[in-house]
Length: 237
Figure (cartoon, rainbow, N blue to C red):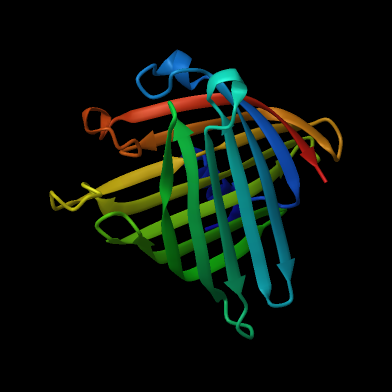
């Protein structure tokens, strides 16, 4: 498969790989598009870091949703992942943690911890960089869910770096009922493609589009496709 075909397939999937350290601010139109999902439109800040080293690489991001009254923070979520080089092997062991907490209408809640372990593979196609991994996922719900997740991420510079396409695509399984009262699994798809216009090496403006199926847990709205775009600015350190 040559680079042009590979690039075309990635763009068709549209999906976030950080290639530096940056901070982002997004305005989310979620309430305007689906009032039953969110009671207001709101800002989200994101801090990202990707750092390779001689032993592998580390990636993390932290999201803060300012979706409570007077713009207070309602949700904080973070992920951190590490790939480990083993000699010249093309694949690397991958470990990852996901978790967070929030507040909704005065009631606090936790986002269940998830622990991931598997194998990762990274490669370049011209100036574009890609990563994919397949992992076992332990979801610490009230009834533990043992699952599988596949993830693809990429960063694609275009037009002499004046534009950047980046994104991730996650596909994973988890228990339909997190309390364990009912049995069965569901398949969840989540992708967040980003497109950026780079004013210079530090300032970028663009958009992120969250596309999901089976992601929201309210039973009435399960197994539906949702599309939530943002407008955003980014500072690259």
